[in-house]
Length: 245
Ligand code: HPA
Image (tube, rainbow, N blue to C red; front, side, top):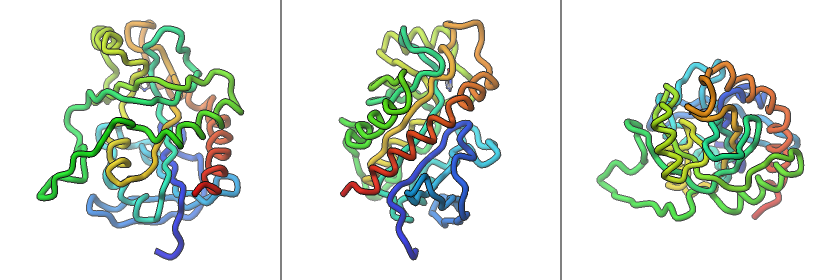
């Protein structure tokens, strides 16, 4: 690898075309991963569209290990991610932004670790998301948008179906604020690779049972509305990371 890229961006639903640049095929133990080497403002970044450039990869089939491995391989120290989520906690509204500080894992059948043995590793998850990057992300977000929630607990489901109202009721009782399908295992794998990781989530709908029904179209529509703001926030954030130690 010639030149290292310090900042990685993993774009969730709707952010497939956030960055344009040169495509790089990275060989990993989990298959080949396509990165886009481009720029966000003045900051060189390595970009991955989590769901593929044509939004063809469902949440339970994302190559999470390959993606994180590939970003590590090109030298990434920070990953800024985005996810679409449903709002569970009262007061959260579609269109709001939230930077989770913790998660609850309700996924069922995804590989969750790089450490399948013989080496056994138990990674510390006391601070699941990188506090330093969360702070920068929150400050950048608040510069560009009013409705930013500074913390929240993200419950991650297996998908690709949306939840039932009974599941949402349970998640609320457990203390979850938002629900999505992609922060696990991405956050865990970044931790295992010692990459500083945080995510900016867009609340695209009220969670199941809190509105008539949920459609993928409404999720994309709200996400699309927020793309220009997310781009500005990420630009700002990347510029600050560039000068960080
Ligand atoms: N549930 C799970 N994932 C989601 C949702 C939801 O309500 N909205 C956007 N992604």
